[in-house]
Length: 328
Image 1 (tube, rainbow, N blue to C red):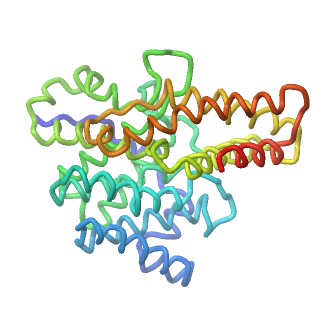
Image 2 (cartoon, rainbow, N blue to C red):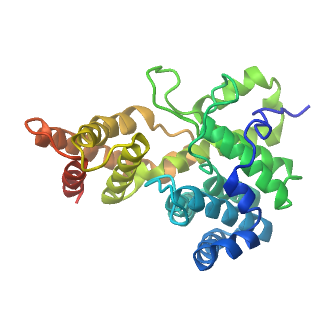
Image 3 (cartoon, helix red, strand yellow):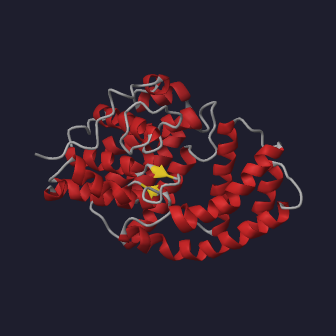
């Protein structure tokens, strides 16, 4: 029997107000108007450029992106500086084409990766409700919603696509704690976890393919490390800004400044040198060289940022301005 893991989180994380208000692409564009329509068109064009033309897939990817924009992006009131529709668009418009240019994949695999890009960050403010497995609350809730979305789009009856989606979103869980054995993307440990929870999965070609795609997806998700350095720095600034926002700290405060110094120096060094590790040969091929070039600059600029603020405190805004200056 084909493995049933990862778990089906749909009963645990039901639809929220956004999912109910935007049940399909037509409803989303009627409610949100021209901005949602333009966003859907942009997502569809990005998918089409990499050979994805199936209408159900285009609509599913577009709807997922609009829902994220409504929750935490430019179409809503709870703006997250990093986890918003621009992250999805960067993956679809830049990172996925870069990977596919060096590693051609069949249409179904391209569809699965595009759907991952659109759906893996759907939910961002979740409280853990599903027990003690290694999957994060945001990932479990995003997966629950995305499986419902696939079903509504008429794609739920495709087990290969659904399994690739499950494994990829589960594998994007990113651990930053103190346990050295669990750091970084869960995709690195997905295979051994499946050995325990779904024995025999390695005998199922669809399952092994899905696990492979999950490792590629994890590398796409962290491919900001391979952006041109000023763009990589801006992604770090967006994350630092989001952290302050989620913590209730104003960027004009000294508390935010202390936090930003740590995140933009030691935090980025830890990300590049400890947390971000390529999980697939495809990811390493597409993003490895520029990531390694950026790494040296991360260390140098982290040191310079600490030196700037070791003798005087700064606000979050001042720290970000100095970091941006270094990056340019």
